[in-house]
Image 1 (cartoon, rainbow, N blue to C red):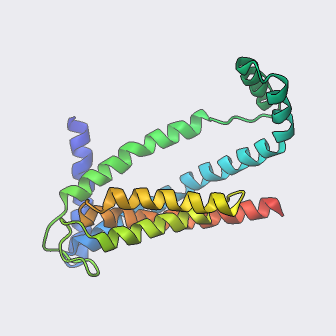
Image 2: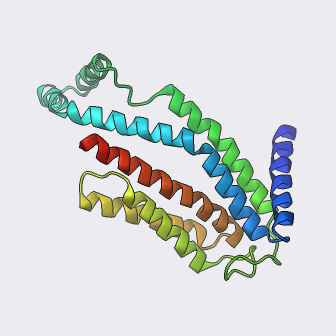
Length: 213
């Protein structure tokens, strides 16, 4: 517990230092810290996204064989699983990689620590764009964050337009429902991180189109 508190204190000190640099504006400090944090992780998260794209492409090429396995052993789910695993192994496909799982788990304390530091730094006197009180919810800011989330999801590679629409609407709605009662400072944190998420979606989509060509 002491280590975690010290970690959050360190992040909060950085947040407070940024607010001093920006004239005491905690809203801008939250946005800059979140943006910088997410940008620093971009090479790692982008590498994982590219790897996921490669796995999806490989699985798509194997779909005829996978379909044949499912038809041949339709009454034996265990046999389907075994044959599918053998096929993946022959082609060097690992749907779930230990390195990726470890990387995602390693990021979790960082995000939670930053989130805790942001919540500690919220004050009612700061201003960010039209938001005059970072401690109170702001529906318009939450809607902007939800729209950004939806656009980011829609930009990603999807087999059909119908799936693209569903992939955009669901995360957008969930984001809005999560944020519309949260403090505006937390929404700024999410919005800034989402900007880098949108950049990643564009880069992954470009890689996807290059693969198709």
